[in-house]
Length: 131
Image 1 (cartoon, one colour):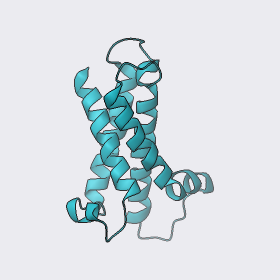
Image 2 (tube, rainbow, N blue to C red; image 1 turned 90 degrees about the vertical axis):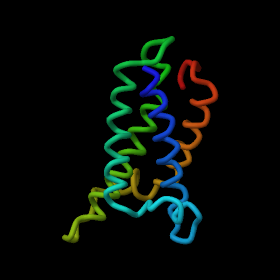
Image 3 (cartoon, rainbow, N blue to C red; image 1 turned 180 degrees about the horizontal axis):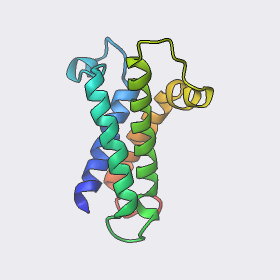
Image 4 (cartoon, rainbow, N blue to C red; image 1 turned 60 degrees about the vertical axis):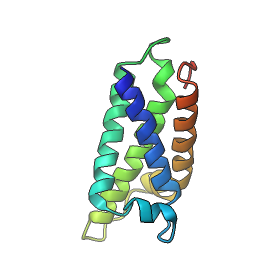
């Protein structure tokens, strides 16, 4: 379905921008309120949902592998936003497990770069086998 293809590209692009340019003085922060917790929650949930739907209903071509990498990166980006939301919202001193901290918090900039790259490449070349 082309709607989910477009949503995947746009959400990967948005999450990439949010994760890479999350400085308080950046122009992106003035354009988008990326520290808004509700915005992070909605974008994270939408990204995980669209990633799951993309795995279940591919656009065309090779059924599973054509949308695998964008769905996987969208899922990782959405999970990164959700982890940031839930551990930032907690009032108690709760530390995430070491694996979650290492993957989704310390490396969120790399996940953001992967989301940006995947969104651009997937938009330019939608029929590539593993993208």
